[in-house]
Image 1: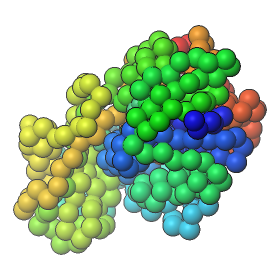
Image 2: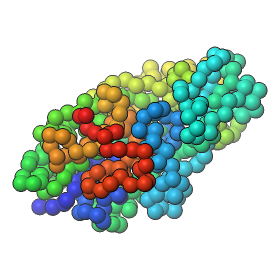
Image 3: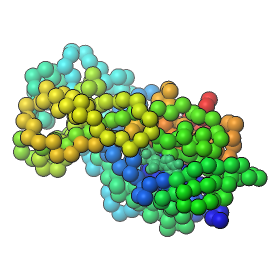
Image 4: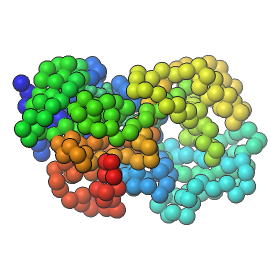
Length: 365
Ligand SMILES: Cc1cc2nc3c(=O)[nH]c(=O)nc-3n(C[C@H](O)[C@H](O)[C@H](O)COP(=O)(O)OP(=O)(O)OC[C@H]3O[C@@H](n4cnc5c(N)ncnc54)[C@H](O)[C@@H]3O)c2cc1C
């Protein structure tokens, strides 16, 4: 039987980035139910880093603390992980504010009147009177980031086991005896990084639920009649009814910001959400839609208060939660994985995580 110190359940970005942090420090095994890591939420994101998300929360701090790691191509890859794009937050009423961030000073934010908006992005319809421009936002090379995490974990000795679904785990001495679809494993600690399945994995380990709700979100890739689309920034409206960004030379990714609660599943797009995405896009811009090229849906999984949870279960100290990443799991992963690793190893959080405390993310607090 395989024996490991730390068994990470889930091969999305949460599990992969944590494996990269812990490998070399302890014997680490990552198990993934699918035949490929990253098939679920991680492979379906909009691939964006945006500082203004999560105003006033420690998750915002995680995003800001993750930026230097992305800039340094963490974990030791040579592919640049961020590509600057910027976000336009469109305004259609005088005085609309971008929540509380205009004066936060944590990142640049400039007001554009309609003339400046037209200069930056010609082709918007008339209702937009201006925009807030957030220049620091960037595309994340998610596939490269995820692959680099897995490669780093492997290089440092971690075992990555796909087609290994955790079925049950029972306490054995100080550790766990874990039954998986690929064979049994003895583990000291179980880390639950199973995304939408986080509560299900906990139940299989005899641990009480944390209260996770997966919510389906849809993205549609449209070919549009507008010349080169590569210069289209991320564009969103302050009513939070859509976002879109350029994709390649002739296409855009459009999201209707749907958040439909569903059971954990292999999410698929609903025709109604696709239609809503196209309708909102056509009402925002003058560019003709020529074809739907691709569409997909994924799950963003939230706790009841929408806060992420990283920490040992208060009733089951051998079980570590790494869940509730919602819509920010990629952009926070470098700092979130460091935080989780330090908590698991019993180390102080340190300067790289300045401004955060373990209590910010305590499970079942
Ligand atoms: C449409 C969309 C757009 C998004 N855009 C962004 C964005 O721009 N920026 C951003 O930062 N975030 C974004 N997100 C959110 C981001 O994708 C998630 O927060 C992140 O991917 C969550 O990663 P994860 O590893 O927790 O989950 P997942 O990637 O879902 O990984 C969990 C894994 O656990 C495995 N698993 C489940 N049960 C078991 C079991 N019993 N045994 C073994 N393995 C198991 C699953 O197969 C799965 O692979 C977006 C999400 C969606 C859906």
